[in-house]
Image 1 (tube, helix red, strand yellow):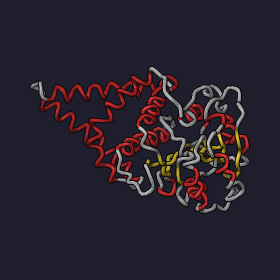
Image 2 (cartoon, rainbow, N blue to C red):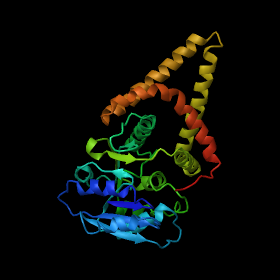
Image 3 (cartoon, rainbow, N blue to C red):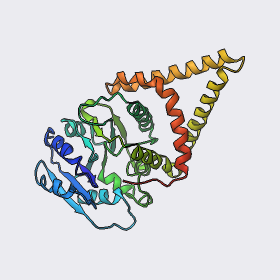
Image 4 (spheres, rainbow, N blue to C red):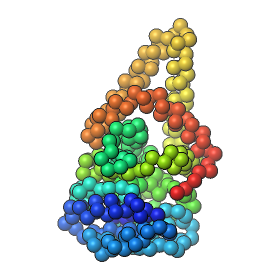
Length: 324
């Protein structure tokens, strides 16, 4: 397992406690935590755990030519890793007890890459009934479809697994190292031609809890950062994103025309078919991750998400976001 942590002293105790409660697989393993130029108490927090539960601490204060941001810290951890199967999560996450066991069970010889599900919470005991979690479930469903057809669509750095040998065959972060983000999806795009088999694992034992704060400014800049990667997407994904953009524009246009044209019944039927299809597909995925209750959030999302997608698609093309 490899974790890059930059100024995460507040989040690390919960992550480390979840690591201490992990069921141990019957294979050698290690947990590498890289302090990435941290200026808070991150280093001292991790050092207190160094050598326990397989944890190996690396204090990374240098630079790696051609790599910027988190990718340099991850490269440091990958270089230090002794084993081929590399599992990744983030410092603001908590792991389920059987996470390592499930990775061992699922990562058979023919599998090079695996993506796991994650749910966002604001605090311990918080409900998962949030619009952001329904939105994430849609992206995970798309990611699963893409992996099944050997066409990467998206990934998540907080819960994915790949082989060190695959990373090396694909040239690592070369070509994307100058981009602040993209250690998950842009890397997967690079690795996809070299992958024998990639899978999505919705198992509860593979599901990670992500604890994000409610800072709206931070969420705003994170969404811009994600959208700004569009220009680095492969051609097929650019076409899909452009089609979705047009699809959402037409959807809002249909809503406007619904009450101002004689074709209102036809428009209403089209909107109902669209909504029914989307709800059916989203519920199928939510049933896999045992979160069908999130389906109720589809109804506010049919109005909010398209507008959000359009806004960040435009805003992301302008760049200029703030990194933490």
